[in-house]
Image (tube, rainbow, N blue to C red; front, side):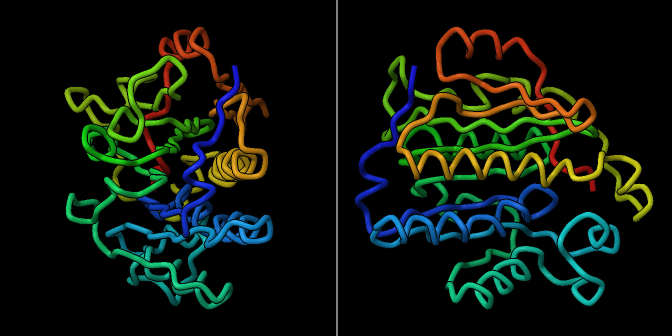
Amino acid sequence: MTHTIPEHLLRQRVIRVIVIGCGGNGSVIAMGLPYIHQSLLLYGHPGGLDVTLIDGDAVSQSNCIRQPFCQSEIGLSKSAVLASRINLFWGLQWKAIQQNLAKHQGIDDADIVISCVDTRSARAEIQRLVGGNATVTYWLDLGNGAVGGQFVLGQPLNRRNPRRAARLRTVGELFPEIADTTLAEDAAPSCSAFEALERQAPFLNQTLASSALALLAQLFRYGRLDIHGAFVSTLHQRTQPLDVNGSSWHKSSRQPAAPRGAPC
């Protein structure tokens, strides 16, 4: 079974992308999206990507260990720092929203929503905002624990994506516990720089986010996908793909997903 990209994403002036969360996974995603933007323009897309970064957190001391922030940026907005850096380097006009996710930010009419969050409540809110009357085409979610994680590209059930067998299932449909607010959140106290290194395998965020970016790049380059996500383990150096077919979706729904984003 093969998924084919909706034609409107290839025809419209720009593809509106919203990245929610600019920490371990989100920062890698944000800094990788300009490469997809440039590739789209090269292949003849009329406008490429228009990206908005959403995050209300400020850079902390521990963030400077395994996230792309430096000492002089401590106290500054993560989303603003990344947007400024990307715009200066690439000559773009991407935007930053220096607040946590809220309904008025208009993610319901984005083309692609990429979530890099670390709580069930945040995913539950995103799941609500991209469904129903929304017109979001794709929801790409990344989550990880200490040594592994997963990324899932889905098509939320909404006005844009009607109920049909071929619709890509979202992370919330495959792994309902990931957005179940009746379950306890994983404890994630603020941690020191040393604890930030001890609590997560090296380069896990880079591996996970780069794999997710490669999936998006393949979708735009070839217009089709045979997989729409994967489980990634840096401990065992292993990747298990999530195939585009109903039986795979059924099996995956019984596997545990990592509900967290980066722990610090």
